[in-house]
Amino acid sequence: MPKGTLRTCPDGHAYYKSSDCPVCPQCEAAKKPQSGFLSTLSAPARRALTDNGINTLQQLSNYSEKELLQLHGFGKRSIPKLQQALEKENLDFKR
View 1: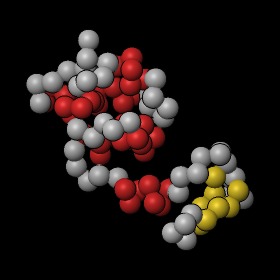
View 2: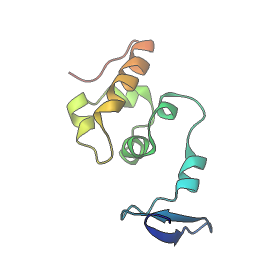
View 3: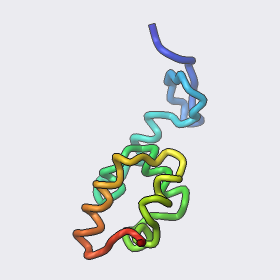
View 4: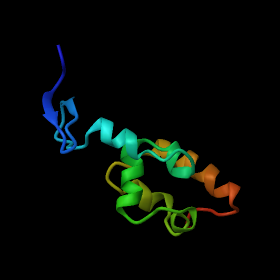
């Protein structure tokens, strides 16, 4: 038996959700970048960054870890992935 309520997104995908989250899993999977630091993150963490205009490592370096953790959908498991990506470009989180 499916968990949640059956929903249909504007693109016609049918899916079940048990939360109030309006995001269609199929549409979200299609948006996932194939490369770059955003591709290593979960969908909620990726949306938290892009919804706040953080699309590049240079933009990311203007934020502290504490500031990022305050974003809705962003969790502590994303920090090491981002730290690694920043280090590859000789960047770091804001201190």
